[in-house]
Amino acid sequence: MGPLICLETTLTGDRYLRILPDHLYSFMSIVHSDGLGQFQQDNATPHASRVVTKWLQEHSSGFRHFHWPPKSSEMNIIEDIWDALLHAVANRSPPPRTSMDLWTVLKDECCELPPRYLQTLVESMPHLVEALMCVRGGPTRY
Image (spheres, rainbow, N blue to C red):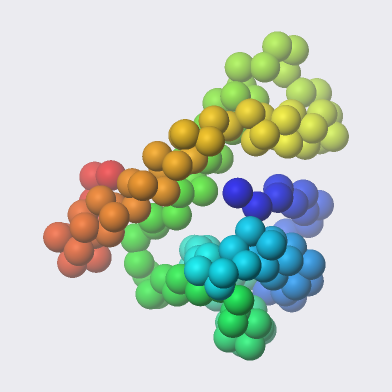
C-alpha cells in the first residue's frame, strides 16, 4: 500500500497532478521495479481530468494504469480500507480531538492493517470483476 497523503484543501486535477510525480511514480518504481505494478483509481473528477490523464499516459511506462470506463461501477478496494480505518478511529478511546490527532491516528491505524486483510481484498478482485461482467456493468451485490 502506498503512503497516506493529507490534503488540507479540495482536490482538483491540478493539485492531484502535483501529488502524482512525487508519490505515485517513486512508489511504483520501488515496489514494482519489474514494471508489473498496476495503478488503480476511480473516476473522480480530479483523477479523470485532462491534465492527469495526459500525465499518466506519458509517465506510466514503469507500471500499468487501470482505466475505469466512464460511469462504471465502483470496484476500488480503497473503499474497504477506508471503512476499516474509520471503524478503528471510531473505536479509539479517547477519540481524536484535533485534525492533527486524527491524522496521527489514521497513519497509525493504516500501519496496523493486517497484511492478510489487504491481500484478501486484492484476491477478491477477480470475483468482483466476474460479478460485474455477469450484470454487464450494472449494480452488483458485492
